[in-house]
Image 1 (cartoon, rainbow, N blue to C red):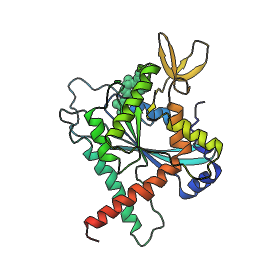
Image 2 (cartoon, rainbow, N blue to C red):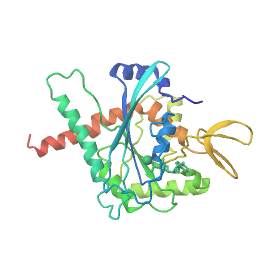
Image 3 (tube, protein in one colour):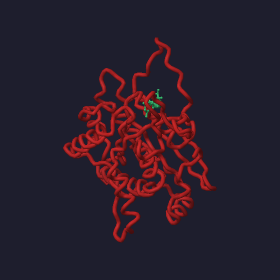
Image 4 (cartoon, protein in one colour):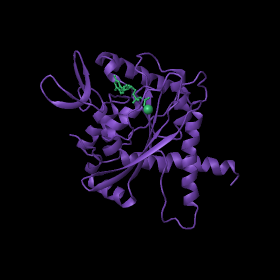
Amino acid sequence: LMGYVGFANLPNQVHRKSVRKGFQFTAMVVGESGLGKSTLINTLFNTTLYPRKEPLPPHAERPQTVSIQSISADIEESGVRLRLTVVDTPGFGDFVNNDESWKPIVEDIESRFDAYLEQETRVNRQKIVDNRVHACLYFIQPTGHSLKQIDIEFMRRLHQRVNLIPVIAKADTMTDEEIIEFKQRILADIAQHNIQIFQAPIHENEDEETLTEIEEITTKIPFAVVGSDQVVLTPDGREVRGRAYPWGVIEVDNEDHCDFVKLRQMLIRTYMEELREHTNTYLYENWRSEKLTNMGI
Ligand code: GDP
Ligand code: MG
C-alpha cells in the first residue's frame, strides 16, 4: 500500500507520450486555512512534501496577504519519473476583508501562462518548461449549507483560467446522507452561477470499461475527501491510512468511506493527460488570444 501512487499504471500509450515529454504535472490547492490542504497533498502523493507544522506562537505575526508557495518533488514509481509540483496558497480567506483573495491566485496562474508564452516565442524552443497549473483543487468547508460568497467569487474568477475540481474537505465530519445532500447543493450553486468545473471529455468510440470509469468518477464530483498521514489500526486488525475515532476508523483508501481514491484516480491516472491537454489547448489558448487582442495584435 505505502509507496503506491498510480501514475505508473497510466494507459500504455498515454504513459509513453508523457514519459517522452518529460512528465510534469502541477496541481494547486486553494481553500481556507485548516481545511486539510497540506494533509491531502501528503496523502495523495504519499510523501511528506510538507513537514509537520509547528503551531504558531500566540503572538506571532500572521502574514497579511495570500502567499503562493510552490514545492516540487520527483516521484518515481516502477521506473517512471514524475515531476510533481504542488502550489499551495496559504492565507486564502484568512483576512478580515477577503474580497480580493482570488486576485494573487489569478495573477500567479497568468504569470505562469506568461512564462510559457515567453518560451514559445523564443527562437530556440527546445527545452520548454511547463509550469502552468493543470488542476486546481478547491476545498469547500464541510458545512452542509450553500456555498459561501468567497467560494463562488473564487470559482467565478478562476474557471476560465484553470481546471477547477471542487472537493468537500474533511468529509469524515459529515454523515453519508449529509454528504449526498451537500453535493447536490454545491452542484446546484455552481450551475446557478454559471461556473464551469472540469468535465471529463467523452470521446467517440469509448469502450464500455472506460465509460464506466468516467461515470464512476464524474458522479462523485465534488469529491468528499479525507486526508491523513497516519497509519491506524482497524478493529479487525488491518493497518490502514486513516483517522481513528472512538466509534471506528475512517479509511482513506476505502471507497466506501470517502472519495479519495476516485480523486487520485482522476488526477493521476485517468485524466492527467486530459487536464494537461485542456490547459494547453483551451485555457491557455483563450488567455493568449485575449492578451494578444488587448495588445492590439
Ligand atoms: P491546511 O491549512 O488547509 O493546509 O490544513 P492542514 O492540512 O494543515 O490540516 C489542518 C488540521 O486538520 C490538522 O490538524 C489535520 O490533522 C486536520 N485534518 C486534515 N485533513 C483532515 C480530514 O480529512 N479530516 C479531519 N477530521 N481532519 C483533517
Ligand atoms: Mg497548509
